[in-house]
Amino acid sequence: MNVFKFGGASVKDAASVRNICSIVKNYDQPLVIVISAMGKTTNAIEEVIRLAKTDKDQAIEAWNEVCHRHKRVSAELHATKESLKYLDEYQMEGRDIIMHYSQDNADEFYDQLICRGELMSTTIVTAYFLSESMSAKWIDARKIIKTDERFRSANIQWRETELSTKQMIDTHAPNHKYLITQGFIASTRDGRTTSLGREGSDYTAAIISYCIDAEKMSIWKDVPGVLTGDPRIFPDASLVTKLSYREAIEMTYYGAQVIHPKTIQPIQRKEIPLHVKSFVDPTSIGTLINNEGDMLYPPMTVVTKNQYLLHFSTKDFSFIAERHLSMLFRKFNHYRVRVNLMRNTAISFTVCVSAEADRLALLKEDLMYEFGIEQQDQMELITIRHYTMHAIDRLKEGREVLFEELQGNTFQMVLKSKEA
Ligand code: ASP
Ligand code: MG
Figure 1 (cartoon, rainbow, N blue to C red):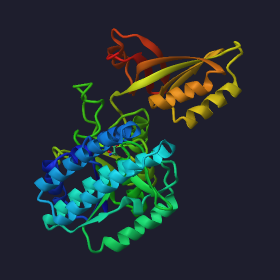
Figure 2: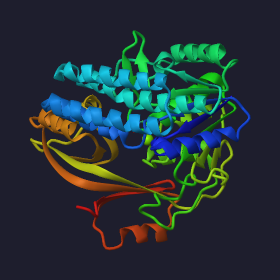
Figure 3: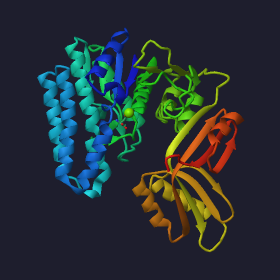
Figure 4: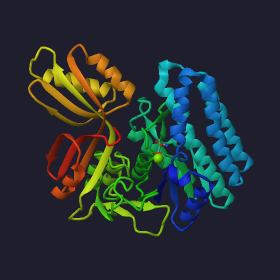
C-alpha cells in the first residue's frame, strides 16, 4: 500500500478537490490518503478559540462562517445529503463545545474544536470520491492514532496505534481502494480528541506508513519538492531532487517547513521512501528522500521568523552553573519554549527561542526572582546547511548579526527581523 498526504492548500476549494481526485486516479495501487484541513481553516478555528475566551456569541458567529465555507465547497461539488448531514453535525457539536468553554481545560478544548477542520475536509473529499464512483472509505483517525493526554502536542502510543491501524487496514482495505483519513488529529486511550501540533498531518502520514509497512509515502505540495530555500524569500531557490533521511531530518529540525520535523524518523526506521511532489504539476519529478541521497548538497537555507532572544543573568553575579541551567531547561520544557540556539558566558546565558507569547510571559514571570531577564523580540534565525562563505556573506549584507555559530557543515545566525 502507498500512503498519500494532501495538505491544506491542495483541498482549499472545489477545484482543488477535483484536482486531487484526478491525481489519485492515475495510480493503480490501493492508497491510504491523509488530508489536512482546507487551506486557512485551522487558523480560522484558532481565531474562534481565541474569541471563545472573551465573547461566545462572536465565537459562534465566526464558527458558523467556517462551517458555511465548507458547505459552500461541498455544494459546489454536488454534495450528497449524507455528507451535508455530517457537516451539520460537526457544526452543531462545535457550537456546543464553544458554549461549554472554560479556561481550566483550554488545551483540551482547543483539540476538540480544532479537529473539526480535518473532519470536515475529509468528509467533503470522501463524498466527492464516492460521487465519482471511486471506492472510498472515510476513516476516523481518532480511532487509529492513539496518544497520551498532552493536548495540542500529544505523543504517540506506538503499540496501540500499530495494532489499531493494522486492524483498520485488514477490515477495510479488501473492499476499498481509497481509505481517506484526517491528518493532525488523534485521541487518548479513553477516546478524548488530541492533536499532534500544527502542521502535524505529515507526521500522521508517516505514522500510518510505519504501522502498515507502506511501500512508499508521498506528500503532495504546492511547491515542486524540497528546495534550497523558501521560494517566497529566495526567488532563485532550486529543486533538490535527492535527499538522504539524515539530511531531511537535519533540515526539518532547523525549521525547513516543507516537511514536519517528526515525519522522517518513523519512515526511516522502516526504510520507506518519501516522495515530495507537486499537486500543481503532478508529473514533475519532485524530491525523493531515502537512504541514498546525494553526496554533494548545495547550500540550503532555512529562515525561521518570530524568534526571541532571552538573556539571563544571575542576580548576585555568581557564575551560571549546572544548577541554573537545569532549572532553566526544566522551565523551558514546562512552558513549551523551544530552544533553537544558546550560548553562555560566566554570568550570562543567552538563548534564541520560539514560543507562544503568553507562555513566554509566564516563563519570565516564573523566573524573574532568580534571574535578571532581558528579551528581544522579532528576531530571525537563519540556518545554512552546507554553507559557503559566499552564501553567508549574501545573507548578512547590511544587517546586524546578534550572534552566530558554526558547527560542522551548519552555519547559524540570529538577526533582527527585516520587518522589525
Ligand atoms: N490543519 C493543521 C494545521 O494547519 C495540520 C496540518 O495542516 O498539517 O496545522
Ligand atoms: Mg497545512
